[in-house]
Length: 133
Length: 327
View 1 (cartoon, each protein chain N blue to C red):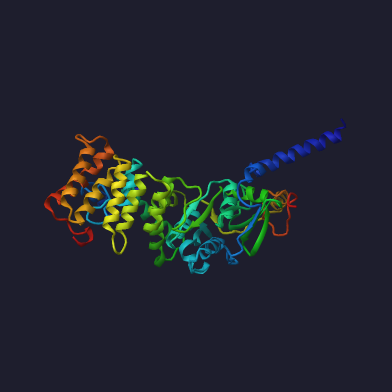
View 2: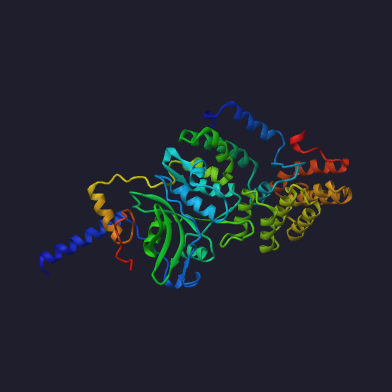
């Protein structure tokens, strides 16, 4: 993981570890709510450092998948830490709702026709399931 | 038994086995479990409809949810927030994030159809992810549940090019649970969630940088939650005109309700100091440091010590450092 990041990220880690910054602070050293909840749930500082790296990964992944550069920063910023981690780990595995066209072979067509009629699926607009009164 | 009948029975068994391998049949809700969801039939006719462009069911469904709550937005604009060209679709976490970007609070419902129907009965349309195809041949689709009819056993969806798609409850449950049971509602800051626990909702408010009104609602709903009072205090301080006195009150409540919610001591000291109440500020931060203990009672407590000592230094000096950004 470290190999894929530039030295700037590395120096960021070093800074965050040694600059005695155990909490993200908002103003005049107030502890922000996110840090307090993180603290309460027993999370440690390293997780927050890792989250910064995660966002870097997500940004690169979004750009690589065609998100316009001028909107990518806002999209990454909008994610919660948990969402950013989820995206970083599963961006190509999680379902992308978008009605991709199924490449239908004849056999598959028959299966889907049957399952549509049984009401298990709803692929074809012209089917009406048997259990639908 | 004739061999023909035997063979046909075998064929039927083979066919059902083969079908079974292709499609999982999910156990749906029962009429009894659905009886408490609300009225027998509901339709949220005011939910707008945006017929979707190709691959754009995500932005269209999201726009239906947001416009319903008064956000002025179109699916085209939302595409830049949620559509992922490389996947020709939209990923669920980005839908959740976009709800927050527009000043609303996302609540994910439990994966039970009663929860979806109950939300609709409460006037909250539900954005769902369906796998309209098979596990091995998925066909992912976002739609919005806007109504149901228990008598007819069907739900009503804004879906694709159909403003009022009627789907049997059975097919809805199969396609929705096959899709993982993702169900999203957009909650206004003056509303409470329907199913979220206190911990889940406080995290949602935090992620959304929710206004003080939303925190106030949560603190009232979960009395005795130190985290809710703590968040309320920060939200009161984040206002353009910070309400120091009200924030101080909320932090005192947090400590009263849970003396081990240590971050509250630090913030209480600073809020008192900002009101020039240096004596009480000192009491607060020293009370917090005493709670941390020598040696610290836990690694979590120890992690707070540097911040607490820095606050004590400022309080003893009778002068607060300028905000971090101005240093």
